[in-house]
Length: 89
Image (cartoon, rainbow, N blue to C red; front, side, top):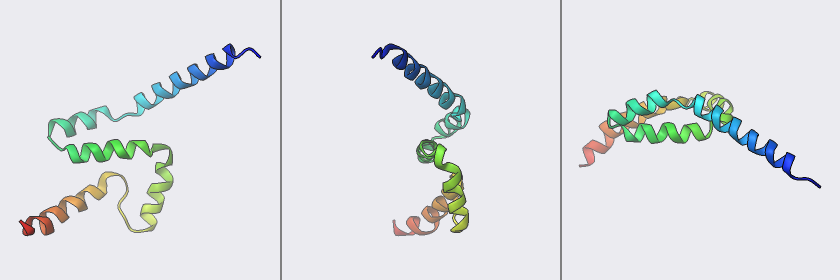
């Protein structure tokens, strides 16, 4: 069997998927977070990006459970850090 055409198709598919991911990456938001020194939110966004294909289902689940989707949950984490963790020091 000649594997060359299959390998070429797989290579093209990988290139297209890589380009699609690059086009969808919120680079401006990531840069703003990095420049602001908000590395926690940047890391959270990068981790959230890993779930993008499953993101719609996950966000629906979060809404059903009363948990804010996207990075909106970071506001609650920051509020917890200010209200609870800051008093421990």
